[in-house]
Length: 631
Ligand SMILES: Cc1cc2nc3c(=O)[nH]c(=O)nc-3n(C[C@H](O)[C@H](O)[C@H](O)COP(=O)(O)OP(=O)(O)OC[C@H]3O[C@@H](n4cnc5c(N)ncnc54)[C@H](O)[C@@H]3O)c2cc1C
Image: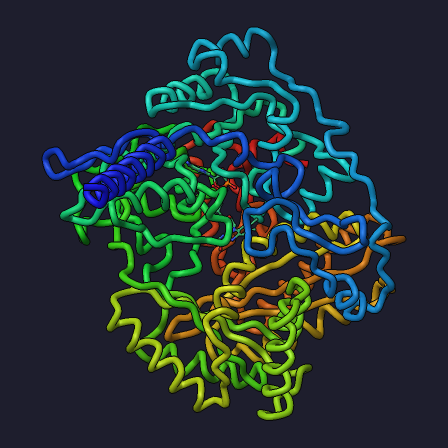
């Protein structure tokens, strides 16, 4: 009798736990998971972002996370969001100061004057009233901080300006449309009222794409799309979803996962960037080997342009229907209109996800491995190869190990250096993410490790792979931290054919060192690279550049000049102007070097005919600046 009662109690307890879990998950997602009607599921709207997940305005990322120095003088990552969070990282500063050959003092912190000198809004009461008539009042703001945040992305120069200088021009008004009718109304109004519209996704671009033309006389309205963030439908059978353009990456991932799907697009900025931003910057995600780049995932795009709505009667897996101007939205950087929604391909959530890592004696051997791997059909979802500087950086970012961790770390290091003869100052690391069916992943692992061993690789285990891969998210916070400690740091990317990789990487590193020396900057620069995306014909490479700037005049300009010099070197060595970050205003000066006058003319004429009043006057790629907006 007692046993039966106990059994009943256990069953009841399990039922309560299941019910509570379901309730919690539904609350998180904003409502119950829907079942299909006419073959399509209509998910509930995502829940409003909770306050604890809100974003910082003055630095990268979530408000609860930042690098700081604890009372013991050690660097720590505040919060508990990432694997690195909450743990002291004692080696970071000592290692970095050896690299740049400047003694760094963790207590020497440059105070920021964020929020100073925000240009006042130029919008008159009557103009605000006009906008207010198109959108409810709480979706139209002249708040200073909102306007400042909407006037920049995440280039080094922009982030330096908001902390230690000022942006000369920011939007006069920020609006948050909630549906396509409001977007249409805004564009119609802008055409007749001489407003400039700049679409805003997550503000994560690294191309100055949101930076306002300083001499623009018209009222600049930033159109923040993030309240158009619904998954409108999911077609489970045909593996497609229609998603509004303002949906943020992490929300898309969470919601699609409820239905057993992913769209597979995961840029490093996925926590904050949006679908519309990905399309208009022509983005690429970390798992592109499996799921493709954004252009492979997008099946259909809906756009409101000054010339009307661009829409199609249906969607098909592939079509040959002449030139489809909607494809021009890829890379349009806000210049042609506002993307309101897109139909994307869906993939079932992978049956398994495994991490892996391999150490190679040299970068050359690592690249050799990548080449052979790229020619097979066994390329994992993500494969990244870091050079020796970044390998060491990753090691310096490790929290202090204790007990067994310290012992095992030492044993592994001794094995790799003494046993295998790897040189700590030459060895490199490759991190791997495998996704797919169990058998598929097993085959990929077999291919990867077989090829790796041919190139002298040492299998370094899943934990190093997981750590290396996930480090990406916390690393994004470092740039703002070191900026306050007199170090400017930023990354820039390119793509190139296989035969260019090694000479190009060497030339760019040498050029950065030369530029640094020529300017008499303190110490040495940090310059490093990693291979991030693979193609049968070549790769994408990221460079990371940093230098100490105390005592340097206008350091943000010096940094930009050096980056431009590095870019010239990249182009001369056969690299591309950008693999996925785009052009914006940051790289537009190089366009005439890579495109014939006829291409640039087509582009400008297209812009002129679609948007003769230059309503979308963000001036990216040098397009459509109104004559009096030119400096
Ligand atoms: C830490 C970090 C990591 C990053 N990692 C990656 C990466 O792995 N891969 C990658 O590709 N990029 C990466 N980026 C760059 C950036 O995240 C991408 O360019 C991203 O696609 C920008 O999206 P967003 O929503 O933030 O757009 P925003 O920055 O808001 O806007 C970018 C441009 O798109 C336009 N735009 C935005 N929404 C719309 C819309 N609905 N209609 C029309 N135009 C629109 C804007 O006007 C602007 O010109 C990274 C950036 C950072 C800071």
